[in-house]
Length: 118
Image (cartoon, rainbow, N blue to C red; front, side, top):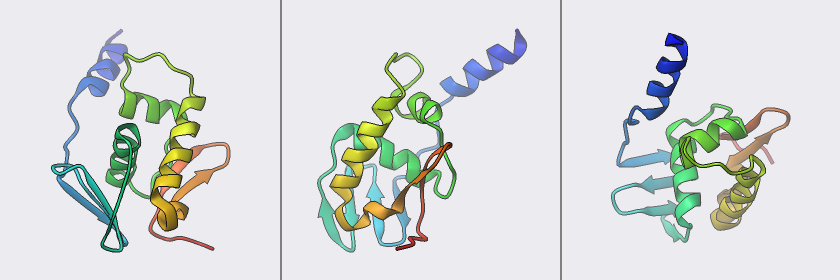
């Protein structure tokens, strides 16, 4: 029972939000809600922005669909795990040339990396 309570409190605890995150040439500013790639502005939807912000704040780590649902959408929302795939696809479309930074890790989830392999 205590383990369950701790898990719920861990999910409810506010995350430390940094205002500006940069990985390679991709930059995200949470205070102005802007994303830039190589100095040029990118248009990113609100959900994709939250997804990108989470991935950038936890770069180089693999996140499962369930983890992304909990951290980006919250534990109070009941949607399919495959919804994450749709938003990752939209995020990649918005990122354009920076899209390869969002990697699919087969059988595990997604990761944002600065080490892009072509």
